Length: 297
Image (cartoon, rainbow, N blue to C red; front, side, top):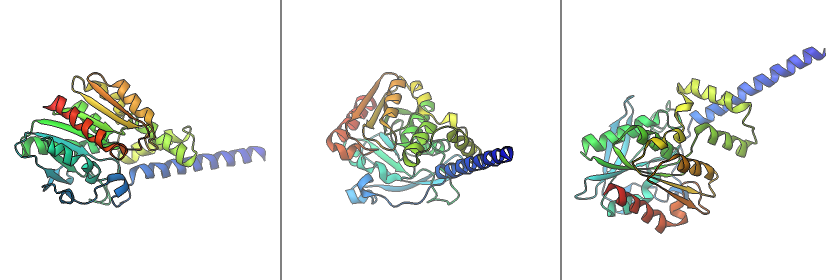
């Protein structure tokens, strides 16, 4: 009787573990469609709301997705900054920085990475397939606009994806990364514990396997910490808030430690996740522009 009870309890535990793993892999893969949050992104309309001239543009990823964007020219400039948004966000996320960058003499491209807004079957892969989107945007600047001096500014998952792309693509000359994670499964495990009180083991390895299988990807290949050291001698600027509740501040420290010179780190005291502009608008804008000016001009 005791043996049967133990077997039943073991089967129940395994079933619950697998079901929970499947559920949390779905949380990672499936994005909801959310409206722009003015508290987070500040500017929720198109660039005209900031009196910025722009072109509506589209380009296609290597796996056939059509991605929309705003190209904002700075007259007479042959340099550009690519703004890469985070998970669940859209091109409005980087628009806080567009106007000062244009004023400093940079063309700016903000675009939407793959998202269910474009097709309900699209999944989120923490940067694995989103790399194709960033590369498509670089192709647009390079081939359509004939711009060779390109900087990249990424936020959260956009920072993580941007780091990986920059390590592989020499066309990105300078990188600025705000609130990026060092390791994809680490940040997911930290969020699972923080939001649901769930331990990393034995759950997260199961979540990871379901995530890889359902997403047809390799989770070991989306860890920016493994790539950022390969970017040198091109410069990187890591920005991370000490009060970040989405991607812990330790991820910024890890990325900075793994990076090689030239590198810069803003340890933003009290800064929340990708909200450093709201924390200190003057420093956020001036330090980003100054970094691009130093290395891209």
